[in-house]
Image 1 (cartoon, helix red, strand yellow):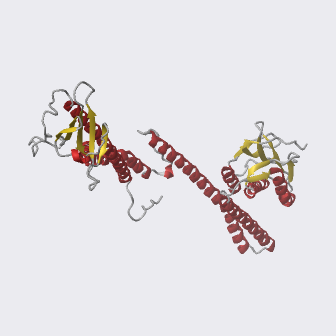
Image 2: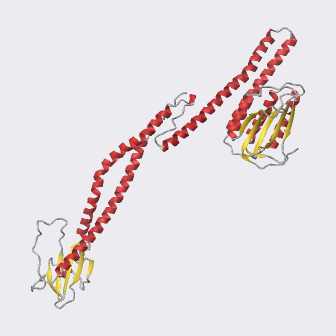
Image 3: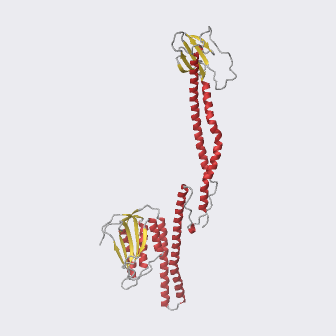
Length: 459
């Protein structure tokens, strides 16, 4: 068997295809993680900042902090501690005592709205800089004897966003660093995972279909086992088809060899014979051989036509009407050969799904087989009915001899029956050859797989 050449041009690798889609999936997960981390960082920065503002305000409102002990508002010296980091934001503090500003750390009191509600709020003190916003917490001292005190602690909103991004980066950065390593490990893992498929492909390529060789059914993975089962089933079908082809070729060679050899001998005899009667007899034998060879070639054409109709849609076919039509067409041949035809069928139609043209070929070849392989005086009977299980059936039987003639031992396994077997396989019908009763020693039966309604028999 000649090996097929691989398709020309570059082909995609399955492992690269899987690796690409896995990386795309990881990248999608990473981007989702980045978005969630950024949102989480901002939320956590909000919580941390609001908590820091509350803690600072509570500390300043404690008794003994000395707010209001000076006539002029206090302010902090310029500059920051060298120990300050990005996690130490610069707070702005404004304190009041009896509605008098007693502490303004950065000169923010004049920019704050009046009145200033207690609690958390977002402020824009400078209308000329709308993007410069502040987060503020305003708290009042608990009512008690003494002056009324109020504190406002403010922090820039930009620091909150910077802190949120920083938290998100600390979450995302390890995943980003590990992504190339994960890609390499995935490529290695997918390559190892695809290796059993590559070994299975090598075994499939080494199969010898001519000998019916199959793959070992036991495989390391369930997915490969199902694939091997499908391949083995296909190999068995191909082997069965190959055997049918070989039998068919053998039958054709056998069937054609006899008439061709006879034609060759009779033509030589006619050429060498001087007696006109013997020459005429030899030429008649040549004619009969040519007719037989032509019949076999006609059966081959019928087989080709039957195979071309396999893909057509099924239709209901009445077996009774089909049998009556074929028996009527074979009546002149049976009369010429001194044989009889009979039909046993119910009064109601027996319909089966199939192709009428193909079933017509099958029945024609069964009747023709019975007439050609039995002697003069044979009764050929077509019977239509149902099996005990309710399946529709059609049988063609013959008694092999009648009125003293000897029965035939050869039921005929030539091209005609090979054609019938092909049709039966294509239509999903069972073809069986049974010995039958003493009155009908040879019988070929077609049985349909699905039960049908039982009609009334015509007795």
